[in-house]
Length: 191
Length: 377
Image 1 (cartoon, rainbow over the protein chains, first blue to last red):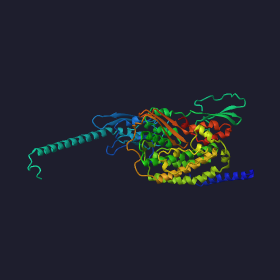
Image 2: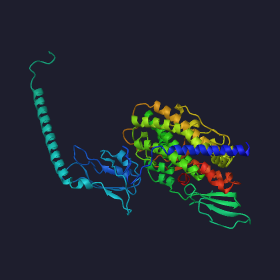
Image 3: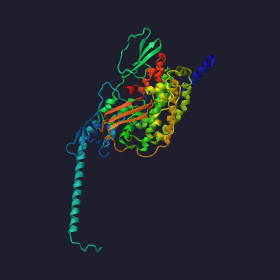
Image 4: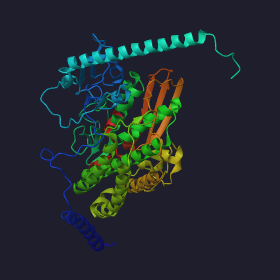
C-alpha cells in the first residue's frame, strides 16, 4: 500500500470508530447515579448475616452450637450461650459479628444446623471507625424473657402431654397384659 | 524475577545506560508490578520484573485452616476470574477425596465459569485499550461486563469474589430467569463483536501499536511455561479444557482459537475468538441443563483425603492454573501450592522486552493480561 492509500485507509478506520461512538449518543444511559439512585439488590445478595425469625417460635433459634464460629475463616463471630435457666432449649446470649473481618463466604449459613442464619439486606456501609461489630441479638433482646416464659410453658405442657401419653400407654399396656394373662375363652388355634 | 524491593536507582556500569523504575505506582502499570528497566536511550537493554507488593500469603493461610475454610480465599487469588479459581479448588478437592458431583451442578459450574471467562476477557480488553490510550472501548466493554456481573450476582450474591462452589456442588440453584438472561446476554455480546471490531480491531492506531510488537516465539513460550491465550497466540494450541478435560468440558463442542504471529495483535484476536467459543459452550450448556440436585444436602466439611501428593489443573482466563496439594490425611493441607499462569507469563517478559522501546512496554505487558494478586498470591 502506498502512503496515500494507507493514509486514506487510516482515516477511514478512525471515522468508522467515531461512527460507533456517535451512534451511542442516542442510546439509553446505562450508568446509575449512585447516591441518588440505588441498584435493585439481587435475591441472592450477600451481606452481613442476621438471625432469622421463625414463625412458630416468634424468635430466632440459635442454640449456640458454635458450628459457625468453628468454620468461620475470618474468625469474626463471637457467640456465648448454651443452657439457660428454666428451659430445655439452648439459647445464645451473645451473638456478635465483626463485619470488618467478614468475607461474606456464607459458610456459617450453610453449616447452621437450625437454619437460623440468613443474609441481611444491609447495603451501603461506610463510617469513620474501624470497629464494625454488630450485635445480632439486639432485636431479640427485649422479647427474650417473654420468649423464655412462653418456651417454659410450652415445654411444661409438652412434658405434661408426654407424661400423660406415657401414663396412658402404661395403662394400656397393663390392661393388655391383664387381658393376655386372663384365661382365653376359647382354646387357641380354633379360630 | 526479583522477589524483594531491590535498588531503586543505581549507576550502571555502562556509561550510556540508565535505570528506570516503571511501577509499582505507575498510572498505566497493572496493579503493583514494578519493572526495573535498564535503558539505552529509549531502548530496553534488560528488564527485571520485581514482584511481591501484593503478597498476602494465601498458600500459607491454606496450611493453617481446614480445606473448606480456604474457599473464600480462592477467589481472591485472582479476582478477575474468581469463579474459575473458586470452582477449580472445589474440583481439586472433589477429585482428591472422590466426592461425586451431580450433573446439574457440573453444568451450572461450566456456565458460571465461562461467563466469568468472558467477563475477564472483556475487562482485559478495556484495560488493554486504556493502556494504549483509548478510553472509549473501556466504557463499552464495561457495559457488557456489568451484565455478566448482574447475572452472576443473581445466583451467587457477589460480583467479584464469589464463594459459590462447595465440595460436591454449588451453594445456590439457578432458575429459569438465569438461563433466559444468560442466553440473552450471549445474543447481546455476539451482536457487540462486530462493533468492537469496528471500534478497535480495525483502528489504524491500534493496529500500528500492536502488530509485530512483543513477539513471543513458541520456543520462548515453551521455555518459560507461558500458557493461556498468550501461548495460543504463539501458535501452540494448548488448552487444559481440551488437553486434560475436567468438570465435564469433554461433553461440549468448542474450538481452541490459535494465531501464529505471537504479537500483541495475535493475543487480542485470540481473546476475542475465545469469547465467541465461550458463548458456544454456554449455549450448549444451557440447552443441556439437566434437572436434579445441585450438591449434597449437608455441607461436606470433614474430609479424609488420602495421603500423598496431588495435582489438579484447570484453564483459567489467563492460562494453566494448577493446584498442588500435599496431604497428610488430615482435614488440613500440609502444603497447597498454586501454579498461577500470570507468574509464568510475566517471567517471559524478561526475554520478550529486551530490545523493545519503552513506549511498547505497556502494550506488551498489558497484552499478556497479568493480574498481580495472582502472581504474588
